[in-house]
Amino acid sequence: GTAEPLPVVRRVNELLRADRDPWGAADWWLGGNAWLRGVPADLVGTLPDDELVRAAAELVEGDG
Image 1: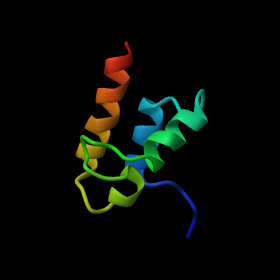
Image 2: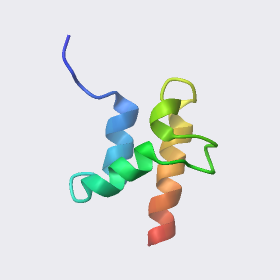
Image 3: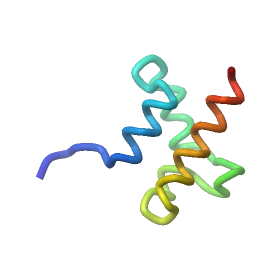
């Protein structure tokens, strides 16, 4: 196999603009998230993908 990221990871990273702010995206993935009640990276595969995407979208929409 290849080391391709999961589709949910790609989508969240797009929302978080990881290409422009890789440290900000890393902080989101590795930091505690009150809305998700956990660390997003630890929750991949345990929560529905759309919940992770919504949590990232909330952060982005709150910035704008």
